[in-house]
Length: 206
Image (cartoon, rainbow, N blue to C red; front, side, top):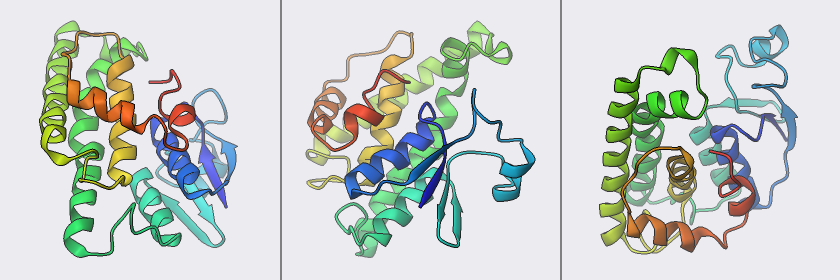
C-alpha cells in the first residue's frame, strides 16, 4: 500500500491518522507543496485531478481523502469507525460530507489569506467574512457536541471525529479572533489519547 502526498496537507493527515487507528503503515511518497509538484506528468498519469492524497492498494488507485478513509475502515472491517447499519453509517457520512463541503468552503478565504498568505486572498473584508462564517460553523459543531455524547456521532469514536478534529485543529491555529467553545475543547481533549492524534492532528500544523 502506498500513499501519495505530504504531511502538511490536512487531507493527507486524515488518511494517516486513520491508518494509525487501523495499524496500517502505507509507504508515504512525497508529492505536492515544496516536494514534487502534482502538475507533473507522472502524477497526472495516476490522478488527473492533480490533487493529494492518492492511495494505491494493489491495483486500486483511490482519490478523495474522506473516500479513502471510508475505504480503509471498510477494508479492515472496522464497523465501529464506519457502521454497517444504514442509519448509523449515514450519520457518520453526513458529518464527513459537511466537513468536506460546507466547512472547507467557509474557511478558504481566512486560511489562505492569514496562514498561507496567498496573494489572491489578501482582501481584508473577504477574510473577515470568512472568519465570521468559520466561527459560526464551529459554534454549530459546539452546540451539536453539547448533546451528542463524547463523540460527534454519539458514544463511539468514528471517522467523523478524525476529519472534524483536523478541521478544528486548523481553526484553533489560524491567527484570528475566535469564540470560546467549551464542548469542542472538551472533545479535542478527549481525542488526545487516540493513536495518531498528536502526530497527525495536534502537531502544530494547521
